[in-house]
Image 1 (cartoon, rainbow, N blue to C red):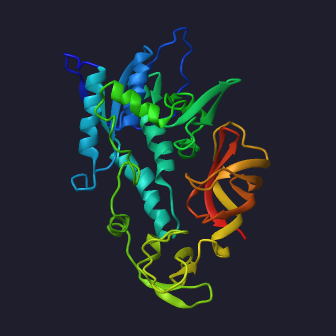
Image 2 (image 1 turned 90 degrees about the vertical axis):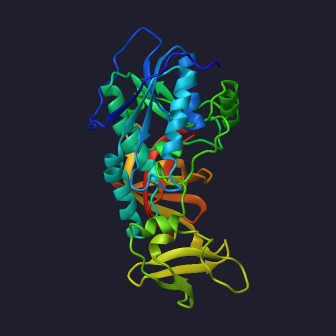
Length: 385
C-alpha cells in the first residue's frame, strides 16, 4: 500500500473521567465510527486495517499508561508510539495520543502491588482490560463521538436475543477471552474484535501484504503497559524484600528466599536449591513465618488440587451462571478443565474439578466456559485438597 501524501492528524489529549456509557443508537447503516486502540503491535495494526477496508470511519488512539521509568532500557512506549503513528499514516487515519497513567496507577498498579505484598500472584492484564481499555479508553472514545471501540484481542462476540456473548477466539493457541472475562454487557456492546475469527499466521500475512511496519514485530510480553523487564528487580523498587527460609513440608531448611513477594506457586526457576534428585518447585507460602514451602518433583501431591475457592466474581451476562457443570481455566495457558460450580454466597464460589489441577495460584483468575462462551469467573483465594 502506498503512503498517503496528506499528513495525518496526531493529537494529544488528557484522559477524561470514566463514566458509564449509554447504549449505541440504532442505525440502518452498516458502517460505524470506530476508534481502535493502536498499541504499536501487529494485532491492533491489522485490526485498524480490516475495519478501514470494511468501510468504517476509523481513528486510532495510542494509550500512554506508564511514566515511572519510561526512559529506561526495558520500556518500549516511545518506540511503540512511533510504530502506531507510522501505521496510522500508512492506513490514512488520524491518531490521538491519550495519557491514562494516573488511572492506570490508581486502578491497576496499586492493586498489583497490594496483591504481591499479600503473597498472591495477580494478573494485571485482566484488570487492565476491565479498568483501562474497556473503561477509560472506551469512555474517552465515546466522548469523542465514537460508536464503537476495537482492540486486537483474539476473541469473538455474538449477539443473541439482545445479549452480547463473549466467545473464544478461533485460534485456540491465541484465544484471549480469559483476559476479558470481567467485561460486562455495557462494555461488550460497544466493543468489536475483528481478529477473533483469524489465525495469528493470517494476521501477520495480512500485515505484510499491507506493508505495515509492525508485520514482523515481536509480540509484547511482560506486565500490561509496563513491558518485559527483570521482574524481581522491578518489584524491589516498590516492595520491601524480607529474606527467609525455604523449607520442605516437613520443616527442613533447604535454602533461603529473597522475599515471599517474588515467588509464585509452581515456580521452578530461580530457587537456587542444589543437590541431586528431581527439580524443586514452590508449593506454598507461610506468611506469618515468612517461609517459602518447596517440594521436589512436578508431580508432588502439594502441587495438585481438586478444588479452589474464588471471590470478586464477575460475569459477562446479566444473570450469573447456574450451579452446575462447566469448564474452567485456572491460568491463561492451561487447558479447559471440566468442573462443577458451587456458590457459597453472592460473591464467593467453589470449583470442584474432575481431575487434579496443577499449581492453582491465589491471585490468579479462574475463568468459566460453557463451550466457546466465556461466562466470567473470579479471583482465586485458595486451593483445596
